[in-house]
Image (cartoon, rainbow, N blue to C red; front, side):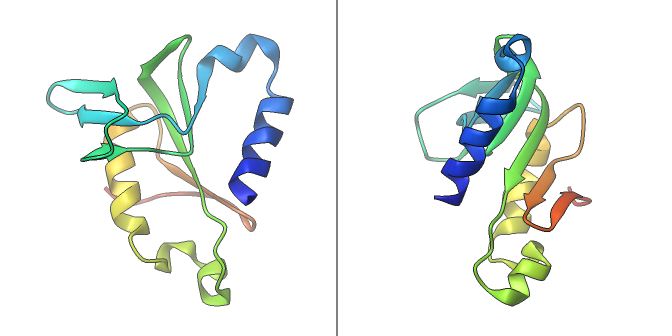
Length: 116
């Protein structure tokens, strides 16, 4: 429910002329460093970031990736990177984001991911 509320807020506040530059929860497949990335519906070996900034009306020309985390446990709230699988997930998204670092969005603020 927190993700749905965040996505609704983003869509509501985006200026009309920028809406073609964002995708919410697109699913990508491929090896960006080798043969590029395509949109897919196949879950196997694919990436599904929460929010992607991309070239106008070209979701495969990825500029930045944002991942939302709403940790339930207090120790993960302080550092969502301690949640199981988060580092692997962000490393995968790092292969997609060519223009900027993957950014983790949490209730405590924005945190650029320094891995990959």
